[in-house]
Image (cartoon, rainbow, N blue to C red):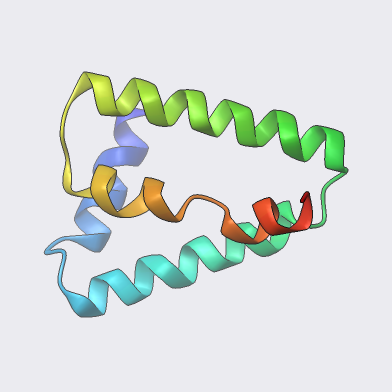
Length: 81
């Protein structure tokens, strides 16, 4: 997991407007995939992501924490309302 995080950090750092847009595009791709999942499985996955979000926020502060998690899966959340 640490290796993947380090790779993502290198890919999206420095965290300027161009890199933010690249990251938003990656998140949009994931949202499109998750929206196709079975609702029950999607909800379980969403809860898992939320638990991981809490873990990361408690563990350490990073530039990703403030940007990624507030955007976490908005399309999926709309689908299950």
